[in-house]
Each structure stands twice: as C-alpha cells, then as structure tokens.
Picture 1 (cartoon, rainbow, N blue to C red):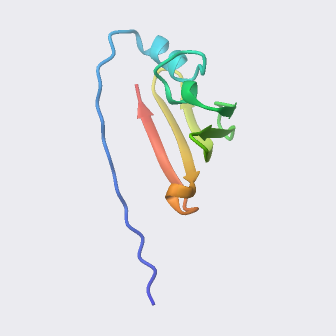
Picture 2: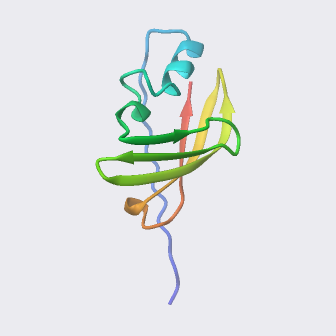
Length: 95
C-alpha cells in the first residue's frame, strides 16, 4: 500500500498598524494578549533556531522547534500535536 501524504497550505494576511520589530517582539512575548502563546495553560518557549516550545492549550499538548527566526522577517517552526496525528507540520509567519 502506498503511503500518500496530503499537503495543505493556508495563507492568512493581516495588516497590523505597527512597525515590524514591534510586531515580532509582541508575537513572541507570552505576556501580550493576542498571540497564541498568551492563551497557554503551560508554556515552554525558546524562540531561537533549534529552540523548542511546548504549549498546553485546552488540555491539548503542542510541540515544535524553531527553524528560522529573523527579527524583521520571518518566524518558522515545526508543529506536532494529537491533531497532526504525530506528523510534523510547519508554520511560517512573514512580517
């Protein structure tokens, strides 16, 4: 039986009326409301290349590793949870 993987790509665009550096800093600061880390019940966050995160939200664990962190450009990390059935996905945020 051939193992076929589906590739899904989603693109969301949003204009935030703030300088990219401020948006970058706010996105990675779990104390700032509006970013996903802020809603965590438990959080380990090391936003640097090869840094890991663990995020518990509504009883579901999420794990990942940062693969690209450019302050005025991009945040890229892997993502694994029970919702990905143990498969690693990727998330990219371009600023």
